[in-house]
Length: 471
Image 1 (cartoon, rainbow, N blue to C red):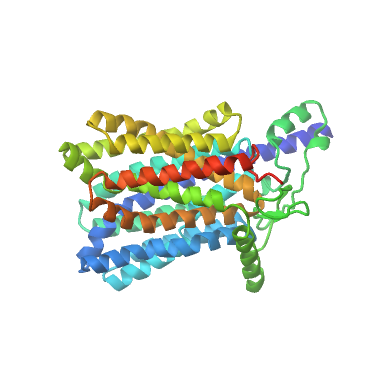
Image 2: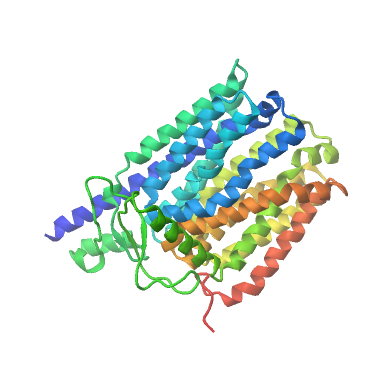
């Protein structure tokens, strides 16, 4: 009997591993398809006859829609479950890119950007799903690998998109190819073994404890099988248990269970609203403010990189492109360093976030004051690593503080905060460039220093898990 239970548990573990690996593939293909299109959008909208002002307004449509929809869609994934919310986002994104492939006027172009702007949150839902599947100790490692896989796709996509563009109708071919990639992703998500991972989790490293207890033939003492498997449409969702109260206050266990997409609309809206209110009324303002400051600082670093290299060091665009590709490749590979570095810090995420933020601030300063290209190369090398670790840290701390019961809402809220940075960064960069080519990174140093100061003030009020200490 014990052996049978152990066998069932290990089958669930294998199912969980398959889902994680497939989510890595989904993340890779997602950004691979998107990055095929991104470099071509401005050229296409101008080819449709748009003036620079109209092109700018059209280009901002996506960012504005993302700003307001990220938190809502993330919260909706907490309510209806990851499977159906992820499928919905992938299918509607595929629709948007298909419409983009048929856009022969500016009106159609704007129409095509609406479903993508509203529902292109597949990566956020994937991250929420991964946080559902793994324990807190495993989460930085898994998130780092997912970010690495996605970044590799973002590096390779422009190469394929550029090749397709050289042929007649290349933009339309790239758009339909991107839509096909999202449809393939939707099919992959639909076929995942969801029913093998519907189980109750208690927030500890259950995989390790399961192996140990099964070895001792005591499976029933440490692993709770809360599966409510249904042969029709099992869906992962996070359900609040009685021990849970509010983000940043207390965290209880969590349960992965099935829910129906066909819940009454008013109930879904009510649940989404309550989860968003729960996050908005929590004491997580410090983490979101650090995220915003660092997002703007990093964007300022990259905002005029090519122009600054040409004006400061007379670098040709080709050489600057090599430097950007080098930095992007390091950023992708550094995702694999997150797990080992986290273990080196003993999973002390507040300390790791503080040190990565300080390092990022120092590297932006070195870039702004660099007397030679070699110093820029050196700062770019470590900048890619520090920013990758910092992004994973801030996400992990948000999930620790807010609780995985609302992981979709929390990750969506984080993306909304980053979207605010995307809106503000170009404006601040333009103002700073009026003074000097080094103006944007210099302003980035100031904002990063503000983030460091905020962390130095707030971290003593946190415990080792990033939770606010009770007075």
